[in-house]
Length: 225
Image (cartoon, rainbow, N blue to C red; front, side):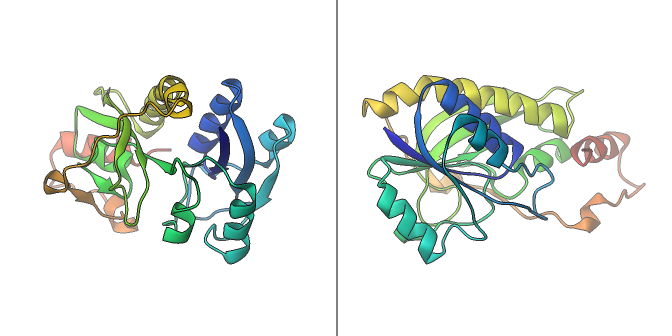
């Protein structure tokens, strides 16, 4: 199974390393040289050189030259983890197995932006780790693999990130052989139950001292490094 990989954050690197460790055939990696959008930005070039994987720096994955390159590679699947850009339908149609995305929430609940941060801000006791088949729109495709992830009172943004990545790595280990063998059972999302989280702004980091101590605690642990 030939894979094209798209990503540019720490989570992307964890998943890419896992794929290589599982002896997956990663034919090409698309990443970025720099990013002002992602606090967990990671340049995948270093690992690609170590693993001998061809890579490209791109500004937008949707540019014609990138889509043409993916068509020429003819991957069976595209894995897109940690990429702040919706993929064009033309790109989504290329791999015969589909484009697999990831969202750290219990889809169809909590689609949208900054799911780890909002889960902590709101004091949720659990969130999720969800792989899904991407289609037009955001976080709305058929679910490939999903697990619940517990959130403890002591968790902050960093520790929850690690929990999510650990769960995702285990899930990848489990579903990759099924994907290769075309034995995946897709679960359609119930759009009636869908909820959406907005993009946070700098004003969301301002403490309103009229809030409860618990709400302030949640805000601080959500917005830490």
